[in-house]
Image 1 (cartoon, one colour):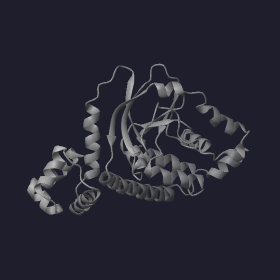
Image 2 (cartoon, rainbow, N blue to C red):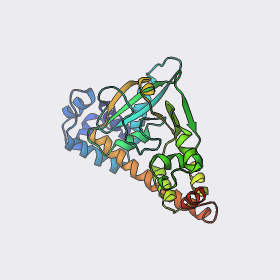
Image 3 (cartoon, rainbow, N blue to C red):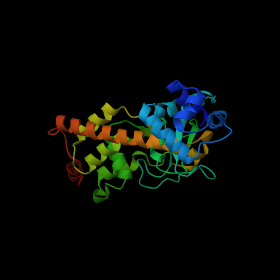
Image 4 (cartoon, rainbow, N blue to C red):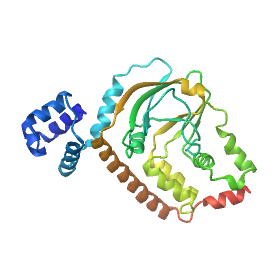
Length: 287
């Protein structure tokens, strides 16, 4: 956090003494923060948050820059891919496919190519931790799902939204699409996409609107280790704690992304309101 505080102060063009005056603390306090000899109290973090908001300081981008710097310091062996993981309470014990069953690609250990998605996913949890991880791909049986209707229907299957057509060929197709794979790779249903997906599943938009939303959003990818073998190939490279102040900025970003998703979905729905099929129509045809 010391580098972030220094970055905020330098962005504002303030000396340590001036910054301290703005925050209502002493020069020595700011100096200790920046030298890593002390951490701001929760009250001080709240004050910094409010001041940064009022001054328009791009703290979210600074958090991403901090992660980028840490990422660039990591050297990987051939065959390893660098990814990011967010945990609500931190990784305890061996990495394992412990997530709840009804996630995008079922039970597994979820990692992403973009740090923003796991950051905003865990920002509401006080004990959350952020990790830079890597996975050795060389011995893993993997499948990659393109960002199209198959992706959406596979997510529907794993989220339990196809049970009414269980036993059909259509259900069987998606139950087998990633069955037995060590690693599943596909687009992330991030903050902007949650609303669009739910709109599709509940009959608000057609498959055409959904597919065009996927194309417009240019989502990052998630890598899901679904077996013990794949989890054993994952290695934690860095653990980065998330402060209360950082979580508040991440919460703001998460809400902003959700609103962007809503506006995007509404615009696309207008353009494709009469094109394509609704989710219930797709399932009715499958029967």
